[in-house]
Image 1 (cartoon, one colour):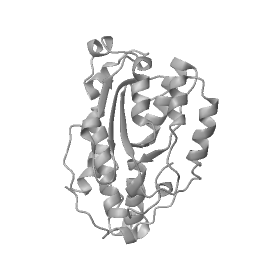
Image 2 (cartoon, rainbow, N blue to C red):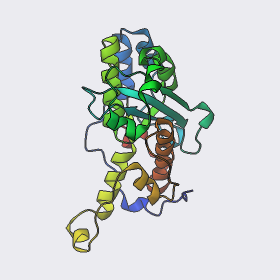
Image 3 (cartoon, one colour):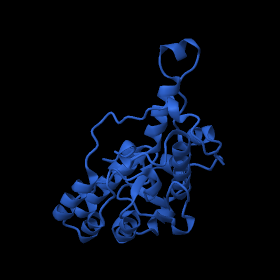
Length: 249
């Protein structure tokens, strides 16, 4: 396991480069605009205020396996999610679904995630499990490793099926690690010394904190891996009193 401590925190100044929306207000507006009852219920559950300290934030790690990397032409084939907070991971509440994509499953993606044509033929469409997925996400801050996948694929998948998309705040462990690596090892002086920012792949990030290696490309395992990574990043680089506004986007 990683060791709690703030030995690195003084050297890391994590500042958002982009203006973060007021998610609390945005959810209120989206709840009024939503047409589908499941999406409306998700927004009506609300979201924490931006000044909530990390030690009080209910998180849920989310991971998708997909038919490819382009949200405009590919689709979701499995969903994994794991609820947690900065102290504890709630494994009993974790969930995993294989779903039937709207597009053909390519051999290249089968090799990566191991979900086969027969697996998806027997699987439900995302519409059939959407209520369960949104219930598990409701009221929690979604944590992902590379926000473009989960955010864009979920939005696109719902637009295709329901005619309306979805918005939600995320904490992106990849973006956090990229910032930390750049601050610690970026710049010309480090380059002269032969130092450079490290890889931000999920497994490489975890190894920096002494976290065990997991088999990648399973949505549930990757969700657990992401949850543990955020716990480690917070323990090393942030205070439990840090407001969620510093991390979510």
